[in-house]
Picture (tube, rainbow, N blue to C red):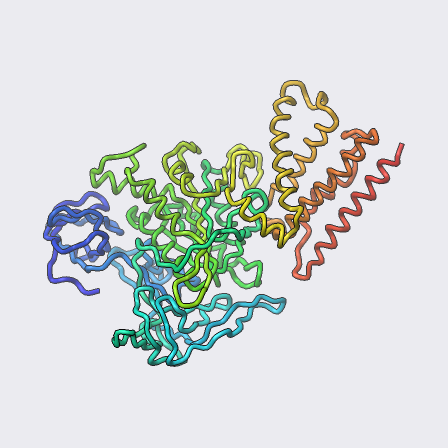
Length: 613
């Protein structure tokens, strides 16, 4: 980016906010360089020839009279090969390269390319599809691109094998003109070298490179939005079974300190069945982000067995980094996520946490002396939150082919003291369709994920019923409804037990309490650090719930024969059900035989129990 001839002059510095004069011709959200240190900033307010600039770096030592250099361009990200496996800060500066060049702390005014300029990528003018098999991951060619083919904005003109799990599709930029490919060749190219030349319909020719830039605050266009009715499987039983989220859906996970928000976000990022994961650490503590950076390279993708970083992009903006860059980090992350969605991939974005993002907005708004809203947040808080979540969705991507992609957004919220009346929580709940309510009482009881099944909800549960019926079993959805009814009935009975004691309940109610305990402890409780229990497929979740209800059925029959719940509790079947979560899954499906054998053992034991004196 070249500097314009007109140079502004700083007249005020208030933390990350800098006010400059002589800025006529500048536009809202233009990027500028502040002082001769060339600190990156963005214009967030214009009044006559004065511009208010939020600076993404430390402004210590900057004072009035220093220059401001406009660029005339909005804050944008580079999109191309080299994103997967990378770790960026809030404005897409590569942190690993900064560490190698400047040490453990970001040097002010440091400018590095987001994508490596010296690395050559092998470009192939083909379109492939990924196939997962027992032998691993392979890509099957479905189309060959050649000179003379007509292309439109968003079309795929070739691919790069970026990682063993991701074929990076090279797109005609969304703002390009339709036309015919005049030149195209296979070979090794850097991201700055053209891989194709397109002759537009108006006769003008333009180059298509592997990388292009896109403004972070502008949603990337799509052809059509689709109804979200395919669940995104996270491997977390309380989520997938009771409060599912769909591909292209939105979810909020609020909770007080220590209730497990970050661990839950890590689990979603690790195990969700998305093709690409974008994880935004927005204002989180440095040690938590360090855990992510250390753990992710060692984690294995459950479907392929390859390292999870082969399909992950990390945005790290910790609490000690400049507050303005925190405000930009969510836009940087979601723009990168939209880019992979446009390739036809299923993308999952985790934002941890949007409360820190809102706090950054509040600080900048205060320095701008804007009229504050509730609890000091800017009046436009709800609009900004809605604009962010509305960029999620399941879509038909831009281009001549009906390529389907999805972007699922999961945002953690950290309300002070766990207060769900917090403005950020309320603004979020108005736009998301899944609410996973974390409960500190459950966390203190060591019940994780600490998602309260009585206060959480998912508005997608009825939307995914046809998928459950088709792919899992027609009895899965009725079992989910019955299990939730049992948990709700248990909550009512607990009030009676507190007053008169468990012995005063009828035998059928005592049995219901036992089954509810089994649902809570044997199904909903999940150990994130156990190699088997950390992830559960939808099929295994179905088998687990089916086994609990099978036990319930046999126990009810025993009750009718005059047996008591106290006698039943001595049977080994309860212990066998408690251990079923540790049945290891395999790709051949042999673990299903173990569940069938478990139910036969339960049937046999109850048969003998009923026949006993």
